[in-house]
Image (cartoon, rainbow over all chains, first blue to last red; front, side, top):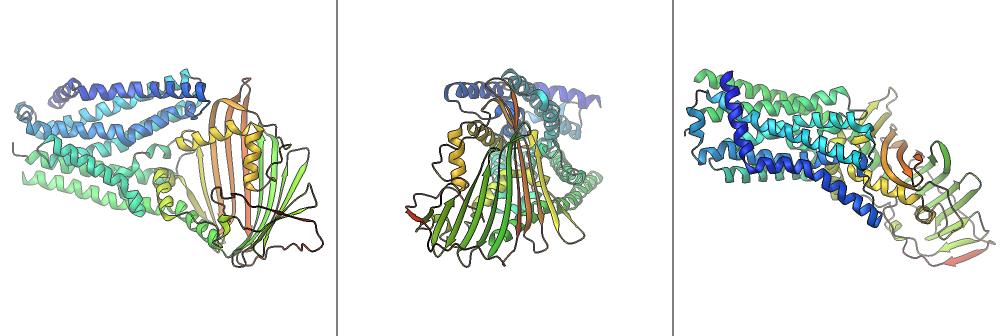
Length: 247
Length: 300
């Protein structure tokens, strides 16, 4: 288990050293503040209202779960797997006293850690900035629940990204493939609405089922199991390919 | 190595089984939304029907404005009749509307004059109420996303169904919140309000003396709750539909307000409704030009 922990530290450090990760976290910190400033400015100047004070944390969450976090995870998965193969640094990982299964696990966990940190930073930044412009604080437990629930669909999408990244041996092509697949999957409900329930990508707003009066327990369980099955399949299939990869 | 393959394959297989089991249940669970959608389509597609609508708008529990509307529509005969009343607490204003023989006839309780419009407004030309285009429906569905999963349906022992969609707090989409806040902030100015009411046909356009003392919300406006409940009859069309929307906010003086809009509509007489007619013989009439009555979709 120590090898997993040690390699997790390595992978987290590697991700943290990348400008992408810092920019991503900075975005989570700045975007809510900028949005609140812009909307207050518009309200003062033009009397326009967006009703954002109360819903800012959740509106931000939906923006991030729709595009920003999946994009970060896609870029990171592409870089951390296919990119490292292309740069021939993957060998350095595998030369350490760590099994391939654990190397894979630590890379996946490192991505999850940054997705979770982003959600945390975003929640704090948006709650504080909504509170600063006089938003009601009553929705705090609700938005906290929404943020916690959002971690599940983000993990499912992240692992699908990791799986797709195994198919490529260049970071750029992996990223392009993931982005194309993601865009196509997001357009699916427009073309085949009845099939969208099957797609893991249509659960980026899963948190709405948890807040407020909430969805019936059966719906919560079923949608959770659906995402869990994607998590299991993508993880196992990705691991299978990673373990057999010729370097 | 072979054993590893087997175990990994087994895990993927297990995931696939789980995916199928849960996916089918999830699909079955969207039935609340689907049931409502099909009932809504049936309601719109009915040849004739009668509806009775009661609505009210209250501020911190005090009724500010309320109204009723009785409407009979027959798409085959291209006829409709409607009696609408609006009550602001001190007086009641009634408005009668008829559509017969290709003419629109309006009469307000303020005068004895029947105003006749030769040209039937654009939105009724095609006989049936404008249907939402398929593409628009799919875009709205896609935007709703997981909110669809919140709709539930319960089938009663008599074959009727109760469908409901209750949204509160952060479940309410940002778009709805923004639009709701905008309406709530504009509703306070009497000008904006009477214009909106005139478009809905409850008030004659240009009745500028009609003022409602709604609070003008300026701060912390938020759509708190949207409750939609519908009863679907055995004929798979809506039997009744109720809606409640709650918006909270503060006015310029800092006083907190909760505006509640309630609407309850009963639908009956499917394919068996004959609209009332008005006999204009011997009555005072006035010909009016129909100008640009083409705002939005008009349902029923």
